[in-house]
Amino acid sequence: MFDLKIINAIIIDGTGSSRFFGEIGINGNFIVERGKKLGASKSVYDANGHILCPGIIDTHTHYDAQITWDSSASPSLDLGVTTALIGNCGFTIAPCKPEHRDLNMLNLTKVEGMPYNTLKKGIDWSYETYSEYLNLLERKKLAINICSYIGHSATRIWSMGEAAMEREATDSEIIEMENIVKDAMNKGAIGFSTSTFEGHNGDKGRPMPSRLATNKEISRLIQAMAHNGRGLFMITKSNKTTIKDIQNIIGNIKRPAMIAALFYNPTKKDWAINILNDIEKSSQKGYEFWGQVSCRPLTMEFTMNEPYMLEGLSSWKKYMTESDSNNKIKILQDDNFRKKVRNEIYDTSNNKLFVGDWEKVKLIQAANLNNKKFEGMNIRDISVKEKKDPFDWLIDNALSKYGMNDLFIAELLNAENNEVKKLLLHDKSTVSLSDAGAHLSLLCDAGYGLDLLGKWSRDLNIISLEQAVFKLTGKQADICRIPKRGKLLPGYYADMLLFDPKKVGTSKSFRKNDLPGGSTRLLEKPLGVHGIWVNGTNFFQEQTPNGKLIRSYLP
Ligand SMILES: [Zn+2]
Image (cartoon, rainbow, N blue to C red):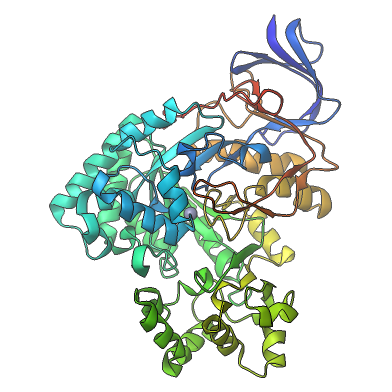
């Protein structure tokens, strides 16, 4: 006798094998049998011929803070994600001493676009150590399964305080960090994450702590991670960091590495594909590296208060790190400053978020009433009308009354289907980069998995549904060494997604004012999704939380 039997399903099991029509029998949290005409069951769910596949495993989220006030990690679970990796890029909120809470929140506000008031109001700080944080998550009655990295930047702040954002670590500080990482791994972290990426700036525009680490420090922390033969290394790399550099950093530690963030850049056309090809070459030398790619254009809504697309520029730093508002205005008025920023924008020798494609930046909501007439237009066209250089118009407008609050949208990278396709289909890529839980007012890509099934598989026909499901589920579980998830096989957890292949996708994004402290965020809704089960419980029907904090991983 099963607890639950799902009948009339087209099963795509996440192994990459072909679909079959049949039934799945579940007892408690687990799948126990699959096939045709299974035995009796206490309850039966009719799938009506829709497709049943494993729940999506989202390997790049930033729900670390949100999960302490919202145990379903909304909107991801509704969008088919049953397991999320948190703590990417080194940005965990644990460990954290009480005196460092503010610094950690200010950093997350800047680097991941989580409103400060939301963090202040929302985070449950009833922990200090990493192990206490994991225990807290367990007490929260998670609705989604969570895997958590131990993050480099938080660890550095624990050991070094403010100095973490200013200098290299001493030997004794590194030893303390090694111990924190080892302990976190013993308590159930999935791995160790870090960032060397230029765009990752924290409080007062200073580099996030991990960016001040030497390669030697990172190597030692990877060794600490791997001390018991487990762990996934995650790095959001600087534009200068090559795959060879990562080989040197990881040395002879035989652990898998996730490398972010590989977007197609129209002005550096081969940049991302070359990295994947370098990863391919490194695999011949015995390294197991994976490049995180995205199936969505990188689109961001922003105001000039936080122009994320400019914040990776070294010339913009002067403005970003100035705290006095009068001085900030003076900097923006300075022609010399403008000239430097403009030159850096147009310099295409580096891979950057924005290279002056002004026609891809649109004004969507004018706070400055004089600009109402320009709503819906791009900056190239606006600046022609205003007879100004586009960058000058943007800055002059920011300096005008209310102009700082004009809302723009920029389609930055990854927009050409034919090029993105090559990244998605590459052997060494892994589909990811939702950044869910972060950049809350800029974007919402939590539904990327449904897009792979809808847009890329059904509409563009570049990948079979079986392969798309494999990339979102079984392959992720294999890379991340997550036991018994990502496949619909007997003995595996019943994390499942039921969808109509003709309709699957996501709604347009919309704004909702539902964050603690009263801030808005961008959200999207699933289309064509009929059921989501987490560890055998139908979350769609019952809304009963049945997620787990995952604490043990395969070697
Ligand atoms: Zn990230």
